[in-house]
Length: 238
Image (tube, rainbow, N blue to C red):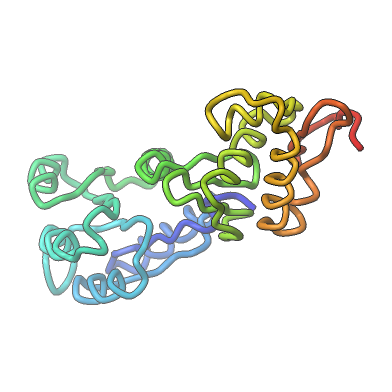
């Protein structure tokens, strides 16, 4: 599943034609988890409840100015770092928007190219801020040691099992010998403790769901390899 399908976007727009156009563009681009607010008050309430990954904010709302919505959202601790993309018909609004806490600005246009490019930039930056590592359908959250499979959290690993899994995934589909893996985990080579690595590998496998367990293969007389869904060849395994 494309990662964009699980990005939660709050659309704040009161004009029906633009509501529909934005939804069509976003869904066509793969964004499926969409929430719609038609007023500033509704936007603030929905943002509190849904905790979106990004807010698309129109400035001209019936009950309050979009700048005020931005200011209120920025005052809510859980939303303090949520990316806000202001959709504006006037470039002069950008300076004021920055002062109120907006992150990005998109000119209102019937061409979706700028909006979609901005959203891609938003989520790339968000991943860097969250210190995420992605490869194929697996995502690793480096600070919390959480493992996500097809965008769903499936495990939280111990420091050593996480280092082991990260080394395998990062170098996939290259097989890694036991000495290198043990060094990656312990920070120093200890070839005499290869049995300890086997025990640690067993713990790692038990911590992962079956689909990921089955991707970790033993390479006879050498070490281990992680075979992701895009690997074309599988090395000899035992």
